[in-house]
Amino acid sequence: MILFFLAHFQVSGNSDKAQIDAINKQPRSDIISNIQESIKVFEKNVEDARSINYKYGEAASLFNLGVVTYLNGKYEESTEIFLKAINLFEELKLDKELALAYGEFGYQIKRRNLKKAMEYMGMGISIAEKHNYKFELSSMYNNFGVLHELNNNLDSTAFYYRKALKLKKEVGDFEGIPYTLNDLSGLEAMRGNFNEAFNLLRQSDEYRQKEKTDYGRVDNLVRWGDTYFQQGNIDSAIAKYSRAIKSPGASEQNYLLRYCLEQLAAGYELKKDFRNAFLNQRKLSALKDSVLNFETNAKIAELEIRFDTEKKDHQISNSNLELQKKSNQLLILLGFVVTLMFITFGNYLYQKQKRERIKRELELKNQLNRSELEKKASEEKLRIARELHDNIGSHLTFIISSLDNVTYGAKEDKVLEKLTGLCSFSRETLNELRNTIWAMKEEDSSLQQLLLKLSDLKHRLNNQIDNLNLQVTSDVSRSVSLTSAQLLNLYRIVQEAVQNSIKYAQAENISVTFQEKEAGFQMQIKDDGKGFDLQNAEPGNGLKNMESRCKEAGGKFEIESDGGGTTIICLMTIK
Image (cartoon, rainbow, N blue to C red; front, side):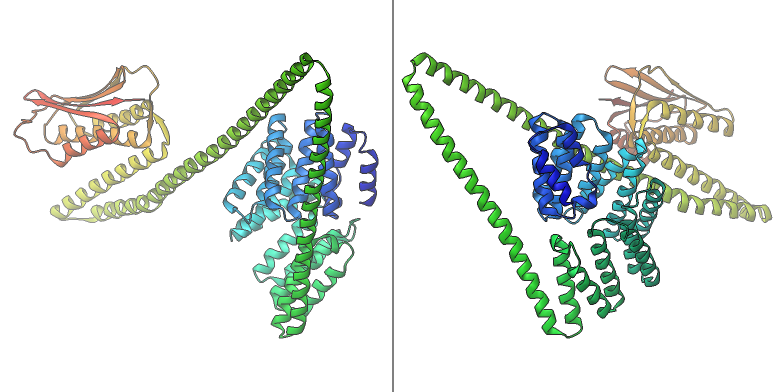
């Protein structure tokens, strides 16, 4: 790691692409073993890449800088850096790097916004699975398991951990295998399977011993301490935490140090050893203060540098003004105009890029929100459809089967007649249920789907009822989209109208026609039955239902009736 930093600062004067790439390709274990130095290195690497307009190098450097900034506890700054990296990867159309950036960013915001973390992680996995990026997927599956663990979905957690472990072994990711083994160990400890948890930690230790840096071994000591703590073996936990604090490289990991001191204080408190609990709590407070002082001093130094720079710039500007006064007025005017043009053009470019970035972020956010709402609505409709099919449908089928069996053995005519009626009613109810499920499953449907369903109704009724001639025709040539609600409402109107024509009007000829209109189409149901007096007849539930369904579908309802039959019209306006 030390050689890595020395090499960087020796070559930093020559911002070469190969040098920038070499720094970005350092192993993760080397990068996180010295957080403060890594931040300086990658900040310099970002500047070097920008100085030669090397956008890939800039994006990769921002990615690594986002990782170490996050580990340093600067979460807001890390978020801003990652969004810049994501924008660059999108601009360069680098799917592999974009997938990793989405996944890493989702993992980092898991404790601030778990829902958004799942979304970003899902986007990254989707891209990686599309291109079969096995090595990248192995880490992303593991991190996705962590998110499911935070969501208390342990079955999904185990599934993604084991999927990650299998893939890491397949691609030979020996650096990543112990991380997954540790996560599986933590999961088994949560389930109370401590023997299996310790066995997984021992497997992880075997990999850690082969690593060149100390970070992994320190992390494993903390994992052992956590498992003992969960088991209730406080003495062993304290021993592991104490050993972790004293291990080489631990002083660079402020987060691990703070965590170990917190656990030690809690462990000693459980043992009623309040003196050691107090001492560790005091060490923790001192460590937090030192981190705060370090960050404060760094900020002060940064402000001092800015002030000195501005002061020198001001002095140079004054000197230039004095020189310009000694020059002729034409040069002064020309310099002012050129400067103003550069400032205006630069500000224009900056504002344009800013607007485009905000627009992309808003579009991405809106797209995610729309996708989420559509997905939830679709899943809920499918769930209800499955519930109707699996529960009510199966119950009706059982009732029909039972009634058929009883009818077969019935001897009395009245009983047989009633049982036969119940069978018919149950079958009719089951058909209605299936029609409802059909409409619910058709998320984005069309008029053609409705015509196919009405054709099925036509064949079924013509075969069941003697002297009935039901026809379904359409002259609509263009494609017409219908929602599932419109689909079901229009089908129910036809069904209700046909039933009324057969039952009350004794009609023999019924036509269902669809005619194309300028603003949409017209659905007309016409029969040759005896009709009824619209002025004097009381509107029944059937007519009210048809009118209500037509309006709900977005149409205009009309009905005409005389001695020669009845005509029902639903005029649909399609946007």
